[in-house]
Length: 130
Image (spheres, rainbow, N blue to C red):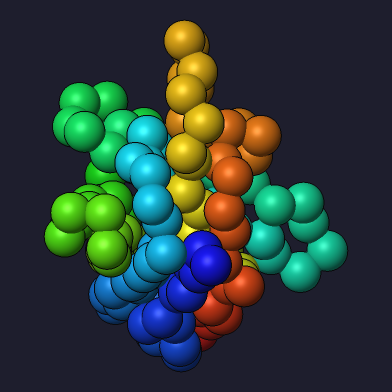
């Protein structure tokens, strides 16, 4: 059974840092992409960052570019971990953050669209105080 679980959320002051982690386990096949999305109160879920699992393209939303960094570790197919390092956070970064893993191959992948990801975590709350 595939499980995607986020951790590391919490309360942080504006200008501070936070590191989110996400573990995707139970995958018997490879991951093509991993990403982070977020949903603020009263707003639709939006793309934050995404990467190709095998290396190469990394994509960021303009709102987080230069402040957030996505990365990944992998241990064969048993367990895969995705990170989101959040620096210089702002109150507008307050949201529930979701991790997602894409296991479907696409000839053209944008990394920014929800349909490109097959497995999602339950989300972790990040609150930035001013």
